[in-house]
Length: 278
Image (cartoon, rainbow, N blue to C red; front, side, top):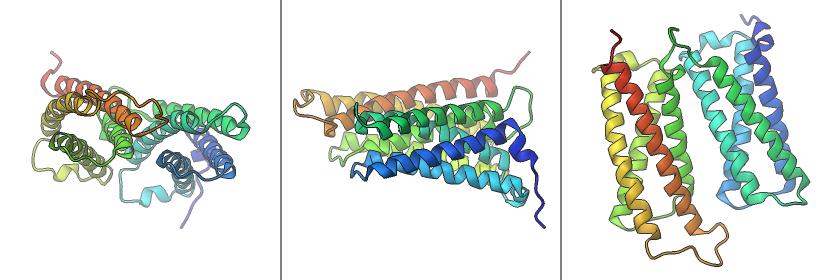
């Protein structure tokens, strides 16, 4: 039997989620009313606003009807990971959309961008409210290392939408690094949400630390190889307007970002696993 829990929409997190639904729905409608564009970045932004609106509304409905307790997943891990993912996606859309599609006379695009920034702030506040505090008992994805895994997977997604086909073996190695690290981060997120980490045959924290060290070493090769093969003796074309060269620059920059995230994640993991308080 379905019972209504009005507290789910009267708490600060519930109010934030309703605000997020309204904002993302209005943004999607404004951008859709402007017209369609064939760039993959336009599709990414539209998917972001639509996906965040639908999933946040679904979370609100499930919590309002108390059906979330019957879902066979770690609900707190799921909602925290989704809030973090939405924060990153909305932030990316708030940067990408005005970069490619805004102009001084584009009033609807400007309003959509401003509202997207407000939506980003709302999701960021939600992450701050739901993130686990020191000493609290919570799921892995509510902790700093868990949130970093979501960030690592998201940055990899940005890299994927900017990639173009490559033929050189060195660049194929870079794509392999992006893919392997993304798959492992996604696997950790799925196992955590589905409560399957207890079935892991080895100490999860030590395996995770070892993987982070390996990912750092692989990404260190990528941040050297990718720009070397793409930009050496290859200046930006004079007639380039969001062309292939710009995409490769995005990949290079996001590779550096992910390397920094993996380094921080590794340091945090080593401190938790091997450096115990006296």
